[in-house]
Figure 1: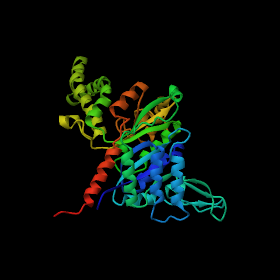
Figure 2: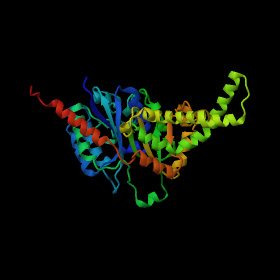
Figure 3: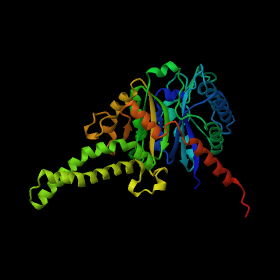
Figure 4: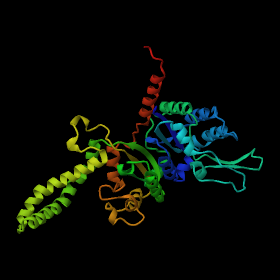
Length: 403
């Protein structure tokens, strides 16, 4: 079957209310699609108006003039107001019949008039959207919040993706939309939702983002990333010597004990030092390689030199959080490196397995946050390229054969 792309756009209100994790949990756990791209965007008025025009000309009837409501909402609430461009989250999904699958999970609007309505809670809009009328006649809308927007048909999805493909080039992945004085006492920190959360379809990535929302911080950058071996080596390189210093003596001591038990002989401390410098160092090096392999999907020793900077084989999600004391707030919610030693209710205690497979990473200082954001190119996003390549492939597929 044909693999197509479609999208979900999380509205500024939903993003501001820290409901992003809940939305993502619903999407990831209830569709057979792959999340291939994510980008925080801040629409200008021109983009908002062009996007509204696409929604306004929908051919599929939704009832209660929903298309016009959505179009007006986009123009009024997703474009700039008061000189501020508001954060929205663009999510890109790939698979068979993506628009149909996403529309089903997003759901329709529950129409409320003040009387009790039956709300199942099954769809995203059941939980997060509102359509409230002023009276029983349902002619005048009192309040409308769609929570998320997605395409009704694949043709609509392709038109919308073409619009975003033309707008995204040159847009930073890192949103700066506050007055200069706001940033004087503001920190940024980097978070990685590690590959162990993406091995199969589940709500785990969304649940982790939901837990981080306790911090009260703002997500100002997000992207799906397949970390290259070179990136992983640079990212974890500073920990290599510390890892060796910590682990080599332990492995040297364990090797000595195993040899003593196996051969029933006593080995002195000098021989243990030799074991530490040989076997201990070798085993520590192997552990470092395993960390890189976990993050990139390939061991450095198995990777050809010309492939070091190519995308890896496993997926993670990179986020940048912003706010006062961002580093410490995120680290507190994350928990200790060893999940078994992490405090109850922290992310690593809830989702981690061991020191390496421990659900998420967070920068431990503002200096390291800057270094890590540079290595992972936090300000860059490949969604624009992803959309351009997809639209080009669609155009090629639609051309009549000349044979």
